[in-house]
Image (cartoon, rainbow, N blue to C red; front, side, top):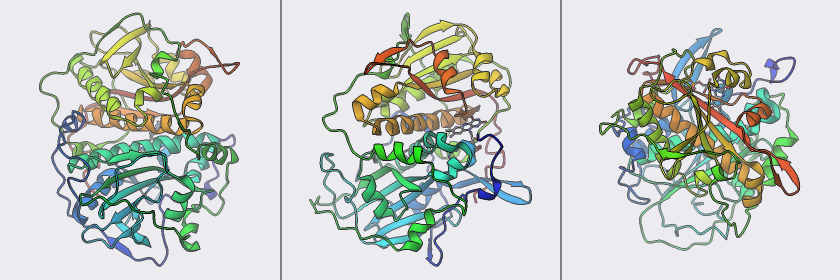
Length: 502
Ligand SMILES: Cc1cc2nc3c(=O)[nH]c(=O)nc-3n(C[C@H](O)[C@H](O)[C@H](O)COP(=O)(O)O)c2cc1C
């Protein structure tokens, strides 16, 4: 937060509008599928890429579940809308663009998803399925049909408040949205391919965004069934300036060169990557003994993904009550599944997942590491860390009542060595994806949860107890990046002002 407070006269707009471009309104009579969240993570969705093709009704539901306006609060005479994903500072830097390639009911082209009107705005006509692919990244050949989702981030929406620190929030927010989108697709039996590797500059041209202000962060794609065709990518012409100028969200925008530098330094792909193994083994945090994660009860909660997505909210008014062992077991089981399902690059090569157990029945208070692949965990240190953690997190006192804090840790120099500067993007997006899994699991288990991005980096690093180690001749430390905290907080079913859709 800048010294001297926020400049309210520069407050960025939360929504993109394209003047004079007619909306293709999406149907709003939703009939969401009733698939348990736990089933989706346990791999019970039967679909594979290309099995199903969405029509406009399904596409409409997928977009609403991913990023729809799910709650309204009236503040100082104005409506503020919350969404199905959380966002640091409720600033919502992410946007979704949809490439509908020969989908029934939608003329082929590239669209922007307008959340306020629940509509698609046509930006570019034609089929541009494989224009972003790097030559060295092998992809299944495309057939005539398919849908692509491009997730972007608008820097100033977040940097208005968080200045240059905003880059990590823009990435994490995108991660939350990607996880929601992937789950929404799976709920309709569609298993998408998530790619963080594409030609950045081509993506800006394709989407018609101003690359100083808005950038593409992910491509979520599923090719349709049909005879695969190897095609030469279509050539892209720049979109008109009224479209590109829509990336401007405030008349008083400031460009932070540090953000542009770090983002642009990751524009290229590092070739011949040799994986470095699990991040948990590289942090210098020692676990004495590993043991199996507690097994969840046979009857895991049946709450549907759609209900959890629509009811998810950040909760901070925790009650100081311990987590029951079976609830903790369900939570850890889902997290281990969510972490192992993230591939390319795998979650465990990017981040190490730890947790502080503060009030879990039957578990000694302390700091633990998780090995999601082996479904095991091990204690690092005994002790109560509730007070120091609250102070590390900028004295957010309410954190002291949290039963568990999850910590996502990474070693930035190792990321850099393996993937080049793009590795930082991968790690922060992966943190956001797992953060969303924690939010959804907590909602299903009727626990409160809140993402935490506000913490002193240096103090958090020292707290994790990791040894400094040498990289490239310099002493470097693992960085701790993201914390989420669930605790018992009974949420009345489908309440809290979330049941209405906007
Ligand atoms: C990456 C990230 C970091 C966040 N950091 C904090 C934080 O430090 N403190 C806090 O109280 N809330 C934090 N939040 C929660 C947001 O304030 C919250 O998502 C936003 O106000 C929207 O409300 P909702 O989650 O109920 O929809 C964070 C959320 C995300 C996704």
